[in-house]
Length: 211
Figure 1: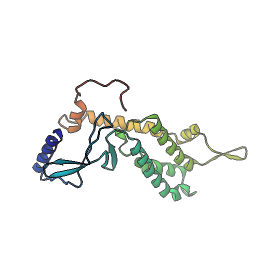
Figure 2: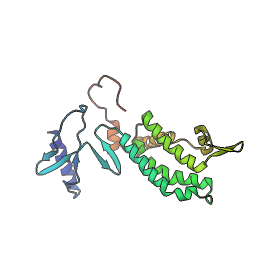
Figure 3: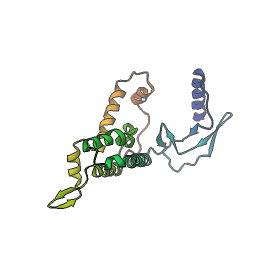
Figure 4: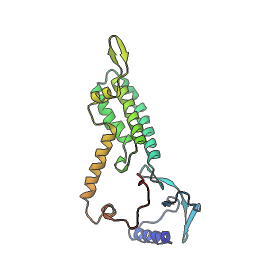
């Protein structure tokens, strides 16, 4: 099996660096075009027995066999929301200037929301989810506006005009371009650069390509 060969190569390379395979922490995630394919609960390779999973967390980011980042984005929004509520006392305080509050959002909340976003391929639904969260934070910071003696909620365009910064979707796209620049300038012997330069064989299936 190809899995056996891949594992043998990994094990051999790991031993060369005095590293050993941890059976409990190592999982097997099949990636195939057939989403209805069935797999056993465990993959046995020699004396090892690895659990078969359809998703796992790597470097604090969720990876799944369908390459669907919706769950990861929802996880990021929940983490950023917890950070937002943790800073609520300071964001609500009249002693903190609006410039300081904006800086708190950009330095403390937004990095949690966009962690590992350099690898995201956003759909319109995910863009909307991210934008909704950002507008919620900005409305909390800027508050309502007063017109003719009455308080009114700010429109979306007023929030972004007051914020005077690229919105969250544009910010993520800029991060992707920055990461692409780092990738292009990497040495050709780096694994990432080799993957980037690889030209896959075969014929593309009919229909719209997946994101």
